[in-house]
Image (cartoon, rainbow, N blue to C red; front, side, top):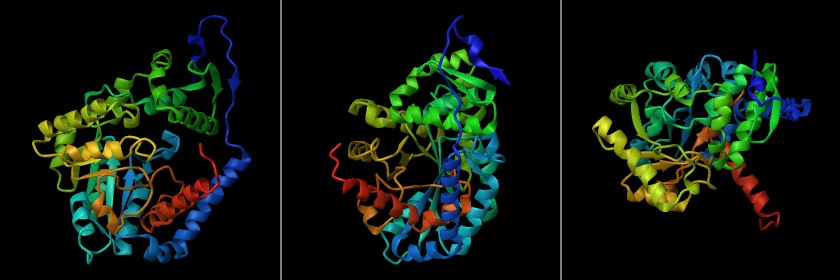
Length: 370
């Protein structure tokens, strides 16, 4: 494996970190995985669904893969996706598109449902996930940012993954730290650490360009490798099970932008897609759609631009009350799990949404004003 240390100025000495999951961290992750699996397999999740599952659930995916290790645990294994769709069929829940979901939210007598959504327009959505969808006859919505298609997107998460994959040592100039990552566990820990560093302040994504250049990580090449092309999104949208939807122009965190910038990000992406697809684009997903980054201001702008729905990454199931606010719809993340099937079963039955609400209540009752 290569090392990026030779790219530093001569004599430069950086403090070195060797990040690994500690035995306690590994045990905690294992306990969590086993707990989720127990809840799903014991029937507790289904019992919870009577009170927590609401009208339906929107599930979120990004990449799909045949090998999670190759992508350091990111993405949904295609075999897990197959198991999830099979379990959805067994649950009696219909898998529907977003327009049908809105109709069912308005119908008090409608059957419970699930919506599948894929973010960012990865090639694997059509190359790996679509054949599975075809076997089950279920639809999905793919949210596509403009710059993923034009290959100009700052896909910093792909750049960081590429650097960690190619190097046994990573010299990270923004923090002046050298990371030693010679094996799989240390690479996973390093990548998670670097991604978390960006998530602490998304403006940091703009600080990575020199690091990418120094480590020969070409974001345009990575975009070409992983994201669908213009012709592919047009072809995908013509498939009866696929609907292409909007996801901003640049995939930046909207809360950091001015009102005019937010409107431009969303409207320009909508126009870009509509001009290619030759039809109205009526559904939208917020990049980094957590409540702290996508709130009422963003929702009002989305609504004013003529969208029918907008989805967040705030966990929870769809309730009848969501028909009055279709622009901050909750979604359940079904990726990055050691047991995707159990994760999905708990998601559609409202288990994770309830846990998230409980954590928020506990934080809110702690007396902190910060």
